Length: 169
Image (tube, one colour):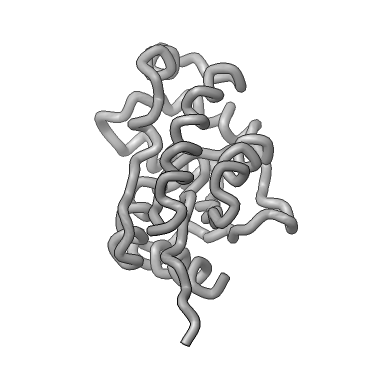
């Protein structure tokens, strides 16, 4: 009988794609810890985004380092963390700390995601920054461990698709 370690998953995508909701559902289904990527942002990053200014690569560096540390610390027991992971270089940073990480890219149209962002309340990311995220996002490459999951269904349907992708990897 072979032992399969618990999966280590990064739920990625632009703001408003459903990372938190799907990430929590996926972690519950997999029976692993969950971490909210937004909680790893240093205060200056949150203030910058709240003011309507997009983060640059330098702003994201300490945030990615914190998430990479979380992933490395959960490599043996598994876990799910959310992180926009917009660029291939960001994903490479995370994968270097946790080579077994699987990226679930929540993928949807700019129109659908803009409608979701406009409807949500209490988040520091203003809808105006969505276009900068769509400009920055790089799809998963064939050589990256992961899958793009459509988000046009319900959160439970999306989480089920994500779980199927993770468990079949």
